Amino acid sequence: MKKLITILLLLTLITLIGCNNQETIKLGVTLPLTGSLAFIGESSQEAMNLAAEEFNTNSDIKIELIFEDDMFEPSKAINNVNKLININDVNAIISLGSPVGTVIAPIAQENNILHVGIASADIATLGSLNFNHWTPPKSQAKKLVEKLNEDNITKISVITMNQEGGIAIRNEVFNELEKNNIRVLLEEKFTQGEKDFKTIWNKIKESDPEIVFFSAISPEFELILKQRIELGLDIPVVTIESPDYTDEPELYNDNWFINAAEPTEEFKDKFESEFGNAPRVFSGNAYDIVKVLGQIFVEKDNLIGSEIAATKLMELDQFKGAMGSFYVDSEGTFVTEAITKKMVDGKSITLE
Image (cartoon, rainbow, N blue to C red; front, side, top):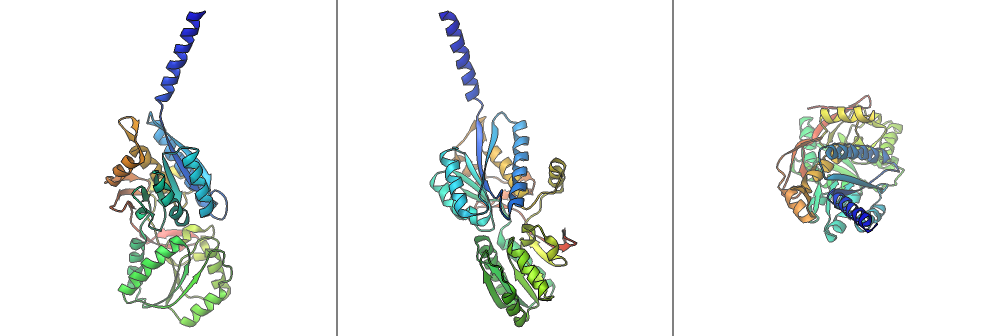
């Protein structure tokens, strides 16, 4: 009987040792799965699940994704990240959006956890463990003003949102406008939750611009354009990124805009084949982040810590993923190129 018990104990020990050899990269993700931007969060979630599934098929060390819903609200994101770090014991954090990424960055740095966000705000500069996979606003603003110059625009009025991403874009646009002697006739600011834009539009009309630059996300994006239509205004509009943040892109018909880098056709086809719909904004970036972190955290079949992983990320010279080929610059930004697009019949088409 004692011999049988000894054998059973040995078998149990062998099994436990075998289990311990199967290490897991735990990635905590905070994103909007409910609320007005849920369509973005859900698409990014699908993209990350796809990336993890592909990685796990070819690796002994597996990726585990732990998702938390922040509704695109910083306070909820803070609670999510504290849970992911202190309870789920994740190896790294992934975030979507400037308001969320900005509040998470210092928490990640303080807790010695690698954080990769997708944001217009420059979260990559908020500590050595913070990185950003997004086309920099400076690149987008430069391309915007190049197109304004091509169209011989010299006078512009502006509507901007008082939100981290919107502010980052606004500042870079103003820098480029000033460099190119394009006159800003009027700037009107709004906060999220604003519902009445007719007063702003009447002021814009009086300023008599050749074009109006604005930045907004849903639901303010839709309200701005609907109230412009209701007032019978035909002043052209231009923006950066905003048409990606709506389920009513037709409201922007016949106007051009500057966008962050687009996913490759290969990724779009794969995503649509898997899920039956086209990927939304952030999805390609989210897919790449999971793939990159899977690659970075594994070294000689072992997991490494956040500081070593951050060093390896800074050395990333070329990575070919859903967003094409990109590298990580000296500030920790995954560098991709801005593009010019136009909305036609509710669908955006690339102009170059």
